[in-house]
Length: 171
Image (cartoon, rainbow, N blue to C red; front, side):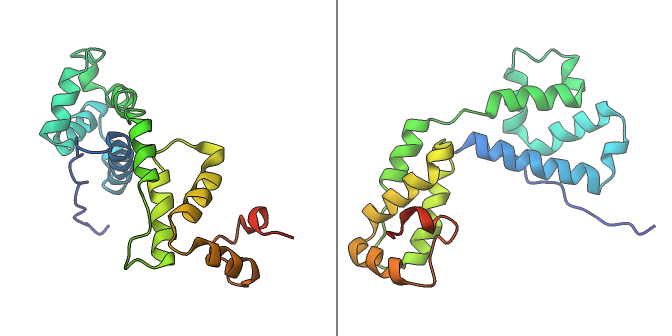
């Protein structure tokens, strides 16, 4: 069997969007333990590897969790569960939505780049089923020449939002 040196995930960032940082790190961790076959090792070894790879700032978070006993700190599933509870939904939705509302097309930015940037901002706003409508409304508000764009969009065969175009194009 060939042996590969697979680098561990980068330590988890405890700054910025903690929810997104946790989801990204957790996904990378899942891939890492499978790729390195660490998932075949004892769970206490997996827990120690997790704490080692997560970095010092994340270990400080683990140590501060009052819901995690010393015995639980040796159990991988318990650590992952408590960290998920801690980091998920730690975002300030009003602040995230205000960032979206401040997101307008900048002078040198093309429409395509602006269309890509808006959904990235909306991901953290928890709009759920209404997300596309909010993005579309804000797109029209934040585009320099939105009226001309709407008219050209209605007659264009190359729609920017092809999956949802039928909702917005006048018949």
